[in-house]
Image 1 (cartoon, rainbow, N blue to C red):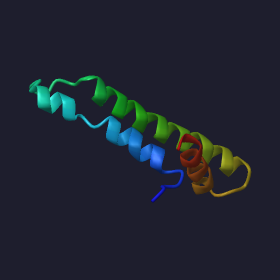
Image 2 (image 1 turned 60 degrees about the horizontal axis):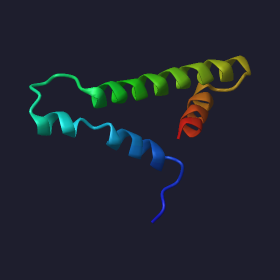
Image 3 (image 1 turned 30 degrees about the vertical axis):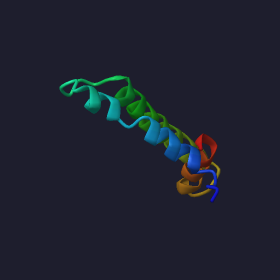
Image 4 (image 1 turned 90 degrees about the horizontal axis):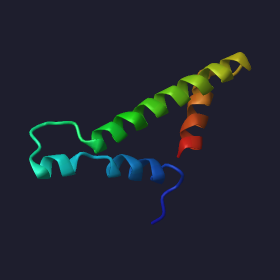
Amino acid sequence: MRLGGGGSIAVGLVAAWPTAAYAAGSGGEAGPSEVVFLAQIVVLVAAGRLLGEAMQRLGQPSVMGQLLAGIFLG
């Protein structure tokens, strides 16, 4: 079964899951995977906010911009 456009987001989130830090027994230190995961979240929120504001200025609902941001980043 083939996933649509959202498949790459799921792969990016799964790839950033902090399993390596737990397996190594790092004692809760933030490794690179946590930083990548947080960066992905920040980019998603920022892009959604920016495109939402842009759509409102065009007279459209902001959710349309948020959906477009998700599609573009996916």
